[in-house]
Structures are given as structure tokens and as C-alpha cells.
Image (cartoon, rainbow, N blue to C red):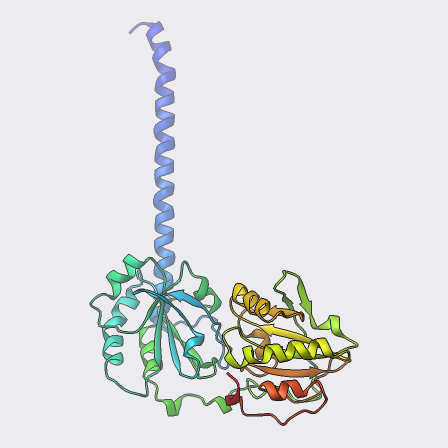
Length: 349
């Protein structure tokens, strides 16, 4: 080969060698990424199977509400099961421990015991992947699909399977269960052995007169922020409502009338749920007082009661001036200074 040919070939040969080396590096990097991802997933599953505790919510925590599509059609919320115990199980179709749990869970759910809680499974992945997992498994409970991990993150889920037992009032009972055996034990736990509502440290019967009103800063329906602190120096009736609550809807016209009539007492409403549903309700009743939205039940928890409609009279100094008013009559009496005794929470929704 002539010198001229060598001079022409060598640069191209070097380019080819460089491209090959670069390709091998990219290929190796991809293999390493896949291996790291596989190891991370396996570590999470190993932690779940071994029962290694994450940092879940403690007993008595308010369970976040959510609305998710159901695998076999429609949607479902956690709050629609209020009044019943709920076992909320977090699954993943790629989790080996979840797959091995299915036969035992199916047997447990099929025994017909009235002592069992309502069981809901929240799973990741698509509909096809979950259909393959649950089809023919014998598990008859609803399977809800989250888009990614949005609900699991709310509940501090560190591995799957993981479960919370939620009481009739929407608060967690005992500790979270991580791993198949712990989930099954939680599901089969007799009602008599679950911690009673009365034993919880969570206040459920409302704050008492003389208690400083818990502050809040919440988004209003118009996008601005509502702050309780902005009403310092004025009396305020703080009303908790829900657009799907029948007694709340009946209260709204009377509440609006009191708001327009009263010069000494302002009205602030804290609602929850869908923004558009609340806007429609406000437009329907031509509400002129501010309506703010709590995300779940976080402000209700601070005020010690999860029912609607309820209300508090807050004085000029930001202190609760009366015990919680439950129901329309008790709430309306706050404007005249005549407070009724605390009614049963069953009178509210």
C-alpha cells in the first residue's frame, strides 16, 4: 500500500474506532442504568417483604381523601365510605410480594365475615397491566388506579404491599402494615381489637370556647387567599361546608341572608371538594361571603370535627367564643349570640 493510501485511510480508521468506542460507552451506560433501576426496585420490594418500617402516618392521622378511576369502570372516592372501616392497600403490578399476597387476600375476602373492613386496592401502572394481575385472582374488592404515585406519596408509602386501616370517621387506626403478612393480619384484625375512636388523641368533638382559633390561609374560589388573621378585630362565624352535603345546601340561603343583614359579624366558609362544584353552588345561591377550599380535611382536623355543616363564632381577638355549633339552627344562632349546646355529630352529614 502506498504512503498516499495510508495517509488517506488512517484518519477514517481513527474515526471508526472513536465511533465504536463511543457506542460501547453509551451501551454500557444504559446497562448500568437498567441495573441500578432493577436494584432500586428490588430493594423496595425486599424492604416491603421483610416488614421494614417506613415513616408512615401515626395512629389517629386524618386519611387524605382522593378520587381515582376504578379498574372495571367509573370512579371512587375514599370519603364515600365514611361511616365504615376501610382497609386501604397499596399495590404495584411489578411487585412480587403483591402477587404472592393475592391468593391469601382472595380467601380472606371471600369468607363473608361481617367483621371485615371495606377493602380498597390502590395500584400503580396501566389498566392492561393491572387487569392481567387481578383477572382470575379471586380478589373481588375495587382496584383503583393512580396515574403515577400521587396517592401513594400522600400516604408516605415506602414499599408495596402496604396498608392502612381507617376508622369510620376517616382517621388511621393503629400503625401502617408493610409486607404481605402484616397486611393480612391488619385485614383480619377483629373490630374489638382495633383501637377505639375514643382512645385516639385526635380531637373529634370540636374545640371548646376559649380556645384560640387555629389560623389558616386558604385559596378562595376567585384565586385569592383567605386568611383568618385578616379578620382580627371583627367577629367571624367560620362555617365548614361541602357542596355534596344536603343540610349545607339548605343552610346557604339563610347564611347569605344573615351575612347581608349583620353588620357586626362576618361570615367565612371553608368548603372542600371540586372547585367547579363549589363555584356552581356559590353562583346558585348568589353567595357574597368568601368561600375558601381546604385540600382534604386538614382545617377540619385543626378545629376538631369532620362533620358538615358546623360552625364556630370567633371573637375580635381570634378566640373561639362558643362551643362548636352543629347543624343549621345552631350555626344561625351564632349571629344573635344565642348558642345552643353541642349537638350530636350525627345531626350533621
